[in-house]
Image 1 (cartoon, rainbow, N blue to C red):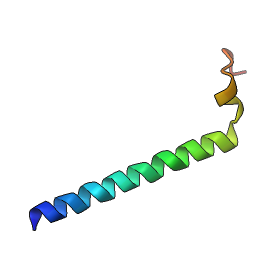
Image 2 (tube, rainbow, N blue to C red):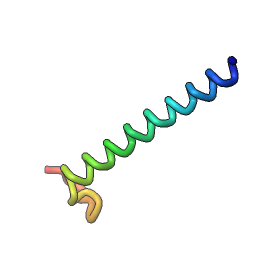
Image 3 (cartoon, rainbow, N blue to C red):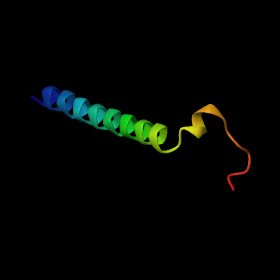
Length: 44
C-alpha cells in the first residue's frame, strides 16, 4: 500500500511540475516573444 501511495504522490507531483512549466513557457512565449529571438543587454 505504501509503495502505491508513494508512486501516486510522485506521479501527482511530476504532473503539477509539468503543468507549471508548460504554463510558464506558454505565458512567456505569448507575453514576451522578443525574449526568445533576441536578448537585449539593457532592459530599458
